[in-house]
Amino acid sequence: MSATAASVLEKNWQKYLKREFASVSARLSMIAIFVSTVLAIAATGTIRAQSPYPPGYPNMAAGGPPISDPYAMSSYNSQANWLPQMPSFSLPTVSDRLYWRAEYLAWRADGMETPPLVTTSPAGTPQNQAGILGMSGTSVLFGGNEINNDIANGFRTRAGLWLTAQGTWGIEAEYFMLNGDNDSYSASGSGAPILARPFFDTTNDRQTAQLVSFPGLVNGSVAVGSDSDLKSFLINARASMLPIYPTICPPDGAQDRVDWIIGYRYLELDDRLGVTENLESQVPSAPGTIALSEAFETQNQFNGLQLGVVYQANFNRAWLESMLRVGVGNNKQKVSISGSTAITELGVTDTYSGGLLAQTSNIGTYERTDFSMVPEIGLTLGFRFTRCLHGTIGYSLIYFPNVVRAGDQIDTRVNPNLIPEPNLPISGSQHPAFSFVETDYWAQGLSLGGELRF
Image (cartoon, rainbow, N blue to C red; front, top):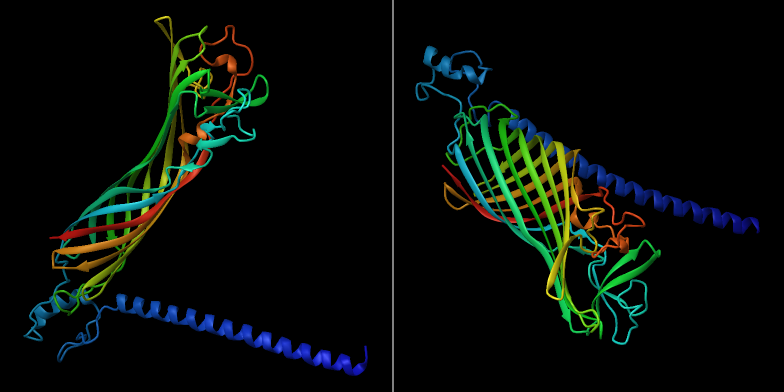
């Protein structure tokens, strides 16, 4: 490369670096200006909130010394008799000491994972391939993905009382319930379509399936149902974070406020997943019917201390409330697995413990307690329709870690010797087996309601 070419290349490279440096510098400057502006606004708001006297407030008595203690104003006025038009001055009071809020909730919650529970195969599929996972043509009708993840409806109610006239101390209670988050599936066939319930055969170490509907073998129906419910109760004490100073403002000129909250919280998440089958043999040499049912249920009960902060900004005809709170405590996990099968042959019915994925090897109730922290954030915009009636619209997000969900507790590994009518003596592995499987849960969404203040 010639010296001239090298020189041109070096100059172009320097120009490129200068442009990039200028671009980066400009971006950093804009970010710095933005951050500085935000900090300045926040600082101004803090100073205004903490200032003992709003603009225009008289801080010097006529003919007397400056007054630096706002709480001494009333005593000074009455003793020195200064400013006759204002003979006394006391701390401001809250005009609405009792409030009650009711809201409709439209939330989306974290779904529940499940294994494939019902499968099908095209007509003409051989019996030894029908409904088996991994076989050509097999498709999943229910399960194998997340369920109970649609928008669920609920309600929330909150009530509080300020214990002091100045609103420095208060007590508050809240309850909400989110239900109706469910999924279901049902199908039946008289040989067609092919219906099956897949599982892993631990004895032969391969995927297989229990047939619900197959030509010339069995007619039947299968139904799967699931639901999830979330509910919460809490009671808090509220304390003003900043001192309240006397102000001169219009009667409806409510001041911004910041409150600490401390209290108790109870939170419960319940799941249920159930499967039922009704089968009728189409084999002439082995007539009979089978009625099978099994259920997987989980319960998470959180009890703990709740800490948080609430900030309310007030405007002429509206207010904005932001809330952050965290629950710290124990989560009691409970898993219940049940199943039964009734086999009727020649008019005689025998009932056995166990279904397909719920067998004597995993049926039972299991409990344990885990430490947990439950954070929640909320944002509510309120509109003053009248002095006593406000409308509200808001957003909430709650995060519940270390929970057990019903779908996660299903073990699809099955020892066929356990399936009713069991082959005695039982040989092979004790599957399906139980072990706690944890995951995290969240729920978020919008709220719409109203608030009464007295």
